[in-house]
Length: 430
Image 1 (cartoon, rainbow, N blue to C red):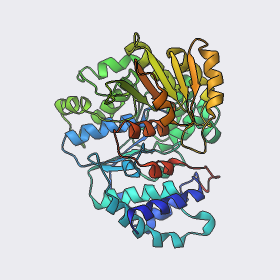
Image 2 (image 1 turned 180 degrees about the horizontal axis):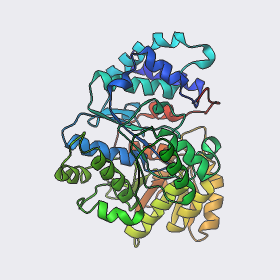
Image 3 (image 1 turned 120 degrees about the vertical axis):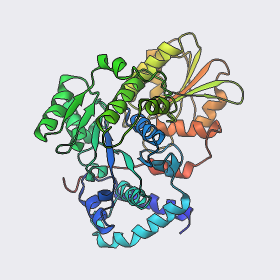
Image 4 (image 1 turned 90 degrees about the vertical axis):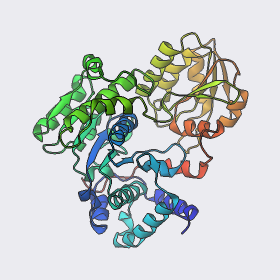
């Protein structure tokens, strides 16, 4: 196979959905030599901030000279973003080779238990990191935690960033149920760190940690400034990133004896973290500024709103907004619409997109004085934007990926963006 054919094969795996359960992943791992047993991990779960926290940890350990694997999802443009070593994406040739090596293994699964896209990519990443002999893998969960394919590892430390409403149809309709799924990554005796708040979520995390004799460190909002006293500059914008940074430095401190890090290395790393699509300020060739932020749920929209209110108070703002149907799009519109003078609603390049007309109706109620338009695509909205002030592109990481291509930040990869699509099937086992 060449790279294009390999991407087509990965597309075909979407037919098997995204099954909750670990049976397939454990079996795939066994059939490929259990690569996870040759690796060290920091496992990261949570509703928001997982990717940013992973990026910070990767930056710190790479700055200290370690060889660091990074596994995250979804990708913004290229599938290869998901699997990186020292922030270098896996090569097209390695993608082709690893998938070709895995294909004979699939014949050992019954048709109704065929490995899913995410299960295959998880094992592909483990094999790649093991053969490259990385020193540490920063390992982000896909969805939930307890039954997520990434949960076949025993990490050096576990992180639960926060607990908020998202994916309720699969993770549960209460914060306690969602916390139970996220807390499923906690392992016996393995330290766990969280910035989760609220008695409902913290109660679940605390009980799980105590039951498994896992040392638990809860970081309260009041502790964050003290924890970051030696981090004078953080390259990622937004007050919420301070909480993520506090998580990262706390875990680094917990693991310091096993993986030594100096304060200067932490300082330099935090000043140079790169994580695109999260409050990313970009200047177009015309000189106009664009703020790209994949605020895809209510908690993310609140963080974006706070950043716009605190950092762009006097700036005229145009929002280009597209949201997936399975998100709380009404709340996202209600939070963001009052902040803009012009709001351009677009579909997201996904079968799960919300109708822009429905978004427009909510935005008109939330901000009757704004100029509100519906456009058939991001490209059309981009052409119709105001050339004055700040343009905010938000509501979905899919939309942010489109914007990055239009702005010339990355190469065009629409074929690969579609690999983020999935449908959850009933779980096979716990």
